[in-house]
Amino acid sequence: MLAPIALLVFAVAMAAVGPRMLVRAAWVKRAPGWGVLAWQGLTASLVVAILMLGLVLAAPLSPLADAMAYMWATNVPEVVEHYLTPAGYGLASTAVVGLAALMLRLCSLTAVTARNTSRARRAQASVLDLVGEKHPGGFVVIEHTTPLVYCLPGACGGRIVVTSAALRVLTSEELDLVLAHERSHLRARHDIALAMAQVLRRAFGPLRVFRTAQEQIATLVEMQADDAARDPRGLARALVTLGCGAPQAGLAAGDVAAVARVRRLTEQDGSWSRARGTAVLVGTFVLLAAPMVLAISPMIRMIVTGCETMLA
Image (cartoon, helix red, strand yellow):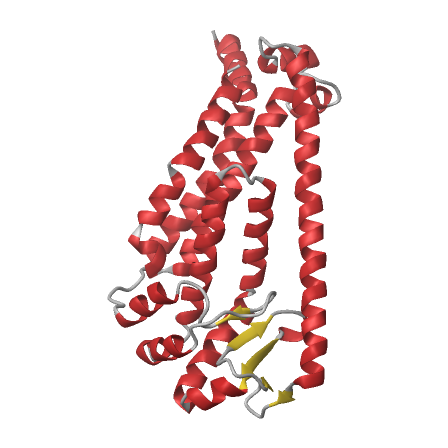
């Protein structure tokens, strides 16, 4: 009975306290790559906690009880005794339905997002093939009155698009810095991180933590790409010039949280140590492992009790 309560408390704490801590933490913007990992760890741990809660409530039902009994080298009555709640098998049956519905929603949203994104990128790539002109610098130039530089992720490393207006307003040094930003997006496959955040936001719409995570990750991947520039102040000047948005399915240099990014580029004052990165990595692992440990705690308690009885 304690496992479902512990998982519920853990999920509520992650949803309520976690976002506030990460939004206020200065290190997240100082090391945006690690910040993205922290936000992904937070949301993933919340999803795992919700799934584990469903499994724990459904555990008394066969064949799940049979599988757990086999896994822990015990019998089904022991599993039922440790996992059945006062609500009985009715709640367990409801948990099975809810868990199945959630899994189906996550899988379907992932598939739909991947399909729609792929279609949008193919359509844009077709347009670029028709109206774009390949530049010796390794990007595609299109005629447009808006100064814009963006990348189109995809197979074969994706491509970078620069409008004719951007070529006119950016110096050669600024253009190089912006191109480095876009290449960083392509290398890191930031589009995957953004797509995952979008799926979770759509799947768990009522929970604000997923909306906040998507917004923060969108900003942090831009900051991480900004760090590829060898001249932060030069990139900041370019961002002011490119203060506009990218087409859907693209990632642009100057579209997300431009003011915060310009301030960060012009005021960078700290380094990032390996110890801090290790701490974030360990913390993320702990967050992911915690709901799993809470879910199996009744079986661990059963084994400990059995060992104490044998030794007594």
